[in-house]
Length: 532
View (cartoon, rainbow, N blue to C red):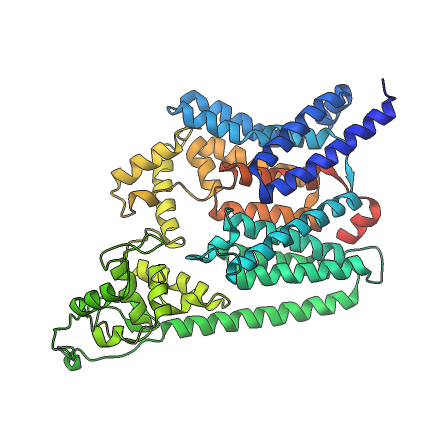
């Protein structure tokens, strides 16, 4: 039998290796992610030393408090109806049970080792962004119909979260360090963080990712201002001031640009096209594209014939993204300020035809490298919803319907909720009961983890779940640590517009990094001094 010291070293190396595999699995492989967690459990059991581990659990009750979120789901089985869904949900959320105990009772890793882990993770992430960039530039043969496709078989929201996590870790490693002079590691970290920011803001353009990037930027500047470096403080204040001014100016500019609207007089609207066919003018419609009204100067007779002569997809058919061609075509021609008739159609290029076939309702959406089209979509959705349009398929405004229906479910199951397995059934029933305007394929769940907790477990269980999430932060005093706060802000912000803990990638992403920064890293005195 090997000496105890060697056995400990072997288990330790396996533990670190499996943590790395789990991190990489978040990017590339669900199977690797599952295998890493199974391996961590087997290694933890094989390591033994349970007496010491039990003592740690007794000393750090926050570990068991956090793990009890999984137990809450077990208790929710008592009044659930859909056991098949419930058991699947419990299986997905096993990381909530095992990872806090495994990481919390294992020997802490040094901050230096954690940095190496993040460096390797960041390299893997950069490789993924380079491949995604190749997709965006058309170098892979993959044709994009939605910018989110550059995440390549991966949730663009999760991608954005991991990008933020990595780049702000790297910035922290560079700014909060022991050495006064910048070495090659710090320089490379800053360059990597700059690239990840460029990719996130100009290429991926996830709304959640952009908002989180702003929040974490403020967090970074806050910790810089708390530090002792006067030079960094001056730089931080300058960047904060310039950032706020630039952001507000750009926001005001884009809103003003979106609200700019053409003016017309009903009396002066022409009645017929140049070919002699009648126009249809819906002057009551408020739908606009780039300031032009979609409801006026429409002659479907002409654009239908013209479209069918140019495209293999019929006028009454569907775009590559599932939307109906004719509505997309009307929007697209409007966005270019064209009349929807034969003469207007002739001004469309083959690239325009291709854009419509791919579901682009506005020609500015074809600009892959501008932030304005992303903001335009958000403004357009809000305006359309305010004017009574159906929010189905629109990521921002359909969430309003998710929340409305979710709150209605909660009001009817206030004390204990609907149980672990009945979330989707409760939503389906309430959509029917309230005669929701959402199409059936868009009748989804809350997309808000906090609301999901309350719907599943009521006021009592939901309140406890929130307590269990926040308690370890204060028990371990991690609110004063920059590295920990990057994870906390990222994870908790993601739960505002996503059911983060309801899927394998989401729950593992959150629990893995949360447990590492709360219990798993040995922030030594010098590092603490830099981070606090």
